[in-house]
Figure 1 (cartoon, helix red, strand yellow):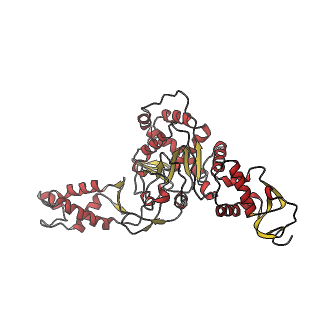
Figure 2 (tube, rainbow, N blue to C red; figure 1 turned 45 degrees about the vertical axis):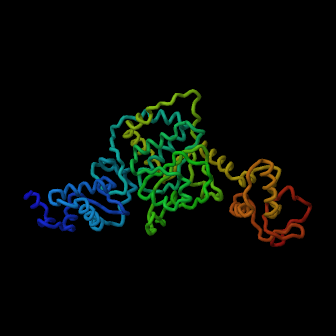
Figure 3 (cartoon, one colour; figure 1 turned 180 degrees about the vertical axis):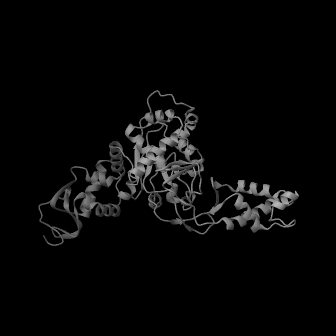
Length: 440
């Protein structure tokens, strides 16, 4: 005990010098305190483990109220170890046993980082044959590289690619196994959360702070009521306002990526903009083969291949970085995304219809006439139509792409109202002179 006391320069025989203890403890156990969490060189250090280590240090000297004293010291450690943020490296991946530089290879040295993967880098890991066979049954070959790039993308803390990934199918194909593999690779750096929650729960974004990936493993088919938060997270380039229960809101930086599994496309009640759709990569999986017998041990087999799968992901990450963070997307997926958007966006579908409108350079139609034609088309095709205000807003946003011109004062016959040049509604076509707001 005397030798131990001699080593403990923070203990005078009666009292503990908390500042001296903290300095001594941090010298032996380097710590950083960021955003309400303690980090050591291996990543987030849970309070329970930190408390146990402090208690073990204090046991020879403190005989009563040991846990209370440990918590007092933890409060002091927060101040001693506090820093603004940890480095967010995008040129390297932090493994459990060292650091892999995308352009320089692996070294066994470790440094403080915002995220450390719970797996070792093993250049001699066996080929993940079970994983590759599973992907061959789940996806078309040209879509596998997209998944490979996205899973590698989640290894580094950045949102440069500005896209989320969706795997959609009819059900039973095994999509959720991809989420299981991501958990094996990322550990506590991953969250499970419903994507709809981002649109209505103001505390949800803060739960994603410090995470590399958020997965919705069974997306509800309800249309999102608000897409602002989702779009901001996917393309995050600066800090955003975050809020936790019973705490003052603060500015925080999110770099979480989003992966969704579901039986249909992601839809929005009100947002049909390019900004909403271009943030989505939607891959349709293969249908489940008739009579296929599912392997109940597949998850365990995939877990045994984690180190090999990590090497496979690194290949995708390096390819993504080389391509300037632009994903390799197959023609099939691009076509599927366009079709899904048309299915979700009745206005776009209307403008590709026949018999209701006609495009002609000198034609003019009022917005009201176009909406009436849209309503007729919706009734004939049993499609739910959008409101007049929504239709008018979308018309203005899409005018250039449709090759038409918005006119504040479009004159048809004796009436002047808002409309468009270059299009007419066939149900109102009459033998009347067309005039735009300049009288031509």
